[in-house]
Amino acid sequence: MLITGAGADFCSGADLSALQKISGASIGENASDARTLMELFALMRQVRIPVVAAVRGRALAGGCGLASAADIVLAEESARFGYPEVKIGFVPAMVATILRRNVSEKQAFELLTRGGEISARRAHEIGLVNQVFADEDFDSEVSAYLTGFEKMSQSAVALTKSLLYQIDGMSFGEALEAGVDTNVIARMTADCQRGVARFLKKD
Image 1 (tube, rainbow, N blue to C red):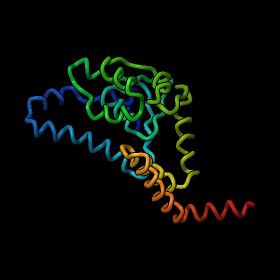
Image 2: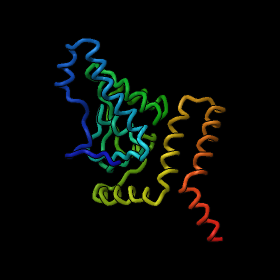
Image 3: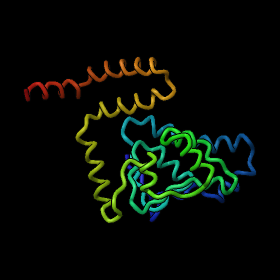
Image 4: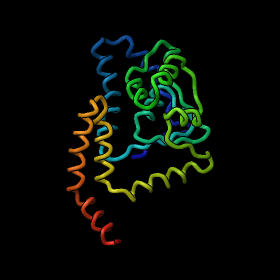
């Protein structure tokens, strides 16, 4: 699944006029509105296929959170990332949950409380971005990257994604047990059985 912006920017965040309007709403209405974003972030982790964010231009505030929530982030060299919410007294609360799983605690703290923007190269250095491509080659590089997934077993990718996010918060022993369960399921898939048979036939 590819997520990209419709214009020059990936996404510059929430509609501030809508945010201003809902600020006068009840606690329940505000909670309901906030849960919409929470559900989107959760869904991105629950779908079986890889979710790839292709970022050109700016990915700011909730837009940066949306990119961070993807399984893979590909960026143009000229792309910019940042969480400026603190400048207007807002807290990127759910985004913090995602960001903290992408970068170190100190990097997350700095990004969320300083409100600045960072380059695609810097985002790559700290683990927020997987790959940075030259602007002029971006579309072809993204296409080639996505094509790489077509060569992989869909069931193995889906099981790996599920396991990777499932072990968040587990103890070491619990995570190993989850690995055992996933290993058993993988062995029984048609993809694995065909793959092993192909490998043995080559020998």
